[in-house]
Image (cartoon, rainbow, N blue to C red; front, side, top):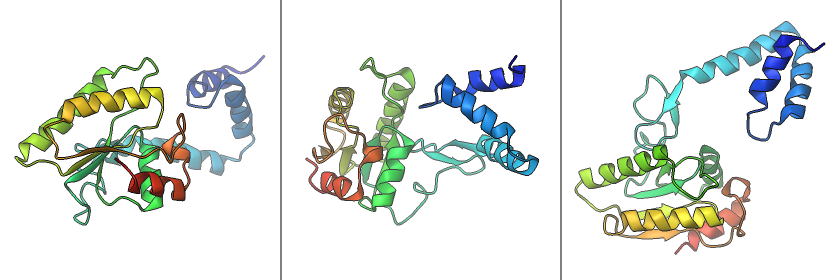
Length: 198
C-alpha cells in the first residue's frame, strides 16, 4: 500500500537522532506535498554536505579543499588553551555564548557503555602527538564534557592521559546541572560554568 520510495525514506531517516519511524513517516508525507523547487532546494542542501570533511587538528567540520577549519586557522584564537568537547553542537553553543577564544577538540559522541570507542582513542592520541610535537606544554586543557556519569568517567580517563603533558587540566564548574547537556545550556549558565572551572 505504501510506495517503496516512502518505505526506504522512513528506514533511512528513522535512524537519525530524535527521529523515530513515526516522525520519519510524517516527514516523508510532508515532503511529498512540497513543490519541485522546494524539494530541489532540500536535495541540493543534502548533497552539499558531501563537500565537507573533518579538520585535521580539531575534528570540527571544514570544506574538503581546506586543510583546517575556520577556528583552527584563525590567528586571533589563543593557541595554548584547548577545550575538549563531545560534539559539534557543543562547539556552536560555546561560540554563541562568546566565552571562549581558545581552540577546540571534538572527541565524538560518548558511548553509553562508558568506554572510549577506537576512533576516540585515536583522536586523543592525535591530540597528544600535536601537543608533544610542539615541544612546549599546553597552558590549559579544558575538559568540557556533559556533567553525566559517562562524561565524568571520560573526563577522568582524559585527565590521566594528559597529566604531565599539559600545564593545567580543568573542568567546567557544576553551573550546568548533573545530567544536563552543554548544547542546551543558556549563555549565562555556560559563562558561569566556564569562568568558575577548576
